[in-house]
Length: 135
Image (cartoon, rainbow, N blue to C red):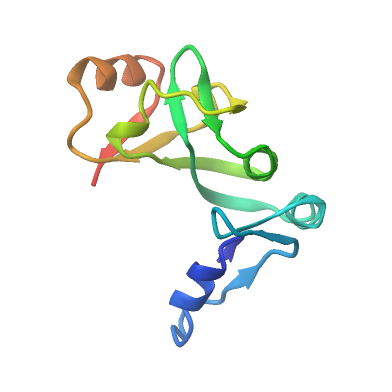
């Protein structure tokens, strides 16, 4: 497993069955994520089977976006290096817009979300070929 989150690394300490690699880069203290050119370089050098990313907002017309441009750049790189992209977004993120676009919603194969997503939004995203997984 590869992550740019020190809190995930710390949470998995002692989980001997999971090999954890943390990206290089600079800690963005507001988000707790490691970002920057070293992170992008690291991710460009690997092949990712399944990516799990987050966002600040998602909508059919504005796409997937994030409030921090440095995080958005890392997310774009992850998407470009991945065979499969999964988005983790609770229902409050739908029809919201962040500052920096990551790309269209069609970049993801599935979205893991909560049970509070409005039925019309769920239908619209499914019509785009995106699988919605309630959790």
